[in-house]
Image (cartoon, rainbow, N blue to C red):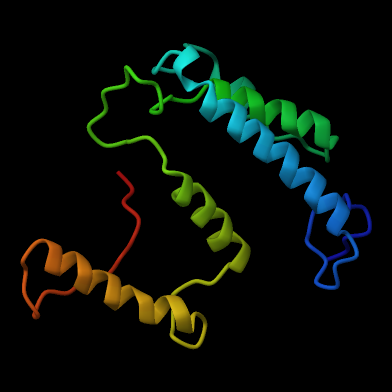
Length: 152
C-alpha cells in the first residue's frame, strides 16, 4: 500500500519519525473526549433527534484532519450520554477512566487472541480472569468459558 499521499498521522511510524504528528492528533482527540465526558451533565442523556446519515457520510477522498475532528465532535454530540447523572440505563454504564485507557492500549497493541502465539499475554490472562469471575459468583473450579463481545 502506498502511504505517500496519506497524512503523516495516518500510521504510527515504527521508527518514530512522525511522533510529533501522532502526539498532536492524540492530544486533540483526548481533548475532545475529556470535554465530552467532563461536560456530560450539561447535555441530555438521550441523543438529540437528527439525521444520522449526514453525520455518517463517508467521503470519497481524504478530508483535512480538522474536518475529521469536527465530524468526530458532531458524532459525539449526537450520541447517547450514559455519563449524565439522570441517565437510567439497564445495559450501558458510565465509562471508567481505566476502560477508556485500556481500549487505547488494546487498540495500539492490536493483538487478537486467536492463538497463544499471536497474543501470549492476553491469551494466558483470559483463563485467569474467567477463574476470578467464576470465583466471585461461587461457580467452582469446573466453571469456564470465553470472553467475547456481545452484539445484539
